Amino acid sequence: MNAPESFSTARLAAARPVSADEDFLIEAWADARVTKWLGGMRDRAAVLALFAHWDDLWDSQGLGCWILRDRNDGIPVGWVLLHPMDFGGHTGIEVGWAIIADRWREGLATEAAHRVVEIAFADCGLDELLSGTMTENVASRGVMEKIGFVYEGDVVHADLPHVLYRLDRETWEKSRG
Image (cartoon, rainbow, N blue to C red; front, side, top):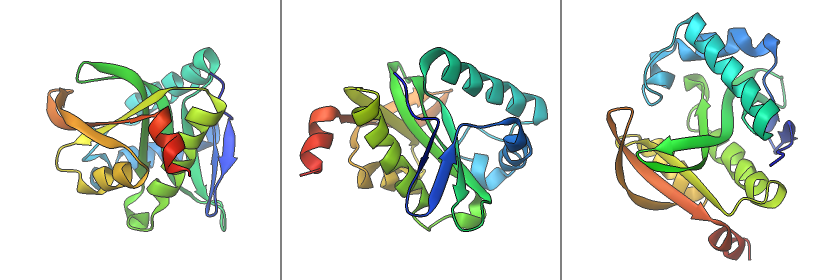
């Protein structure tokens, strides 16, 4: 698998994280509104460990996290990821995202995740993707459904109730017309 280290959409520029992104990530992971659905806030050391993990994923598997920036002003607005996941006993490659709270309800997560799904199937040759969130996260569930994922069931992940969604290549190809 070799995902591109950068991509763009109509409103977003996405790139593999670099050291200059550390402060943005530390600030984002300190916002309880954002991290409510990500297992809670993380301190600087935990964020830097996550950053190192994403860097290792890029080097070892050719995929990972992209920092999302507004194409108009270059300000970071969130991140999107394509990474291996064990989600309630279901293993596979997950598409995930987080948008800073001040930019919620603009469709940015849908726009970025839609492009990452295309990268996963068209560029990386994957046959199936997973996505999941905590049961009550209606916004992320809506993103999953908008980009074609289908609810598979309830699971327990990180000792919390989650939902699991799945999208296979055949369904994705049919949805493209």
